[in-house]
Image (cartoon, rainbow, N blue to C red; front, side, top):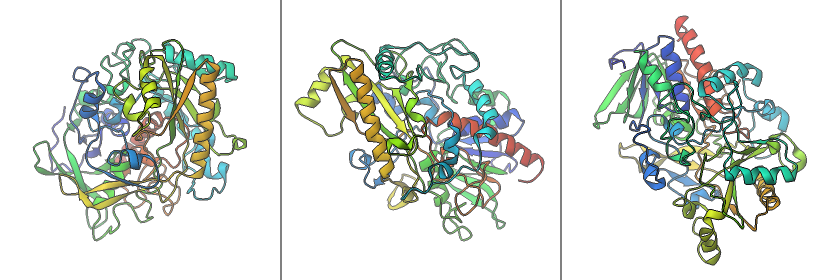
Length: 522
């Protein structure tokens, strides 16, 4: 691993080491570019991961204070935890389930295809599916996505078999164990999935792709990466020309440091990325960096989500095997006859016994609730994930009344469901229940949305500077050497799990940054 001087202004500084930041770091390092990665969390490993839901949550999750507002139920149930994301080297790629799906062509043209939707701030992406397809292919190969590149799918556990049975009886056609960035056979120096069932707690076998033990070690091996865990960035600095010059952060010893930079890439997730831009306001950029449009923090999306659980006469043991290796894709297309635009996926999901009481129906009590707990071994479960509408009122702002331990205002996350989200969720609930009823369920349960893991938008890409924060390369419209490198870039959310697209955009962005640096454009 490299040791880059604080005063070295030739380096690219990346804030965050997850799907976007970790991938970008490796891609740049492989091109011979010096990179400093500042990660707020500590470095774990498959050996230090713990197969215990609550202990793992404390080990990996981002638990710094945040506040919430809006009508979404999460604001009532989990007011300090709007998102279930990670603060650790590898970011949320340590916690994610591995589902790796390409966005569909129409989802890149939401404004054109869906039309004017009252209360939605829709916009077409400034990049098309055809432009991204070669990079999607590179990402799938890098991540070892099943059902691509000749990689077989994962085996189906009982949770999948129940889903498959009901789906086929319903007439659904596209049902399988998914496109998963989890090794179904040894690959890339990592073994196959051991079906441990603790995908959300960090993969102890290393079969699941994570930048923690794929991209970051490969970047370190080049001698071009200086990874600094437990480094909390508080602001980005700039010069009189309006170009960013470096970042200020607190290191693991609590000492304030200043790292110079030629380029700064922010990959802190869709809550912390806009927060940092807003915290970096100055006399030149009074409303925060890259915010001449006023769009920094706006259009926050978290996907339309919910879950359906079903009880069966015989045991299912849904918790045995890969958590999300099972999907029904038939409802993901564009079909406004259903009463909403956009589509959704139905994906297998199991919550461990420790999590089930917390998430089944927060605040619930009584005989019915106890019945579901008593029948835990007989349950099957699915997660519903669909496209939610971007709204400029759904946004990340600074809460000046609450400060973190470094004295900075925390992020407030405001969210209200759009009517389209509600109609889609109810349709998905109904179809999910029908799937399980077709499979022989004796009882079904609709579970409200959990704290979001799919955090998108808030610094969206746009062709025109007035409509968003960054151009088609993730380069901010206002500051040419400042980039957005995570899910904040999403112009619209699509129905698909976002990680594959985040990695795809990072690979593409690395090519652009390297070219711009070579040409001395940045």
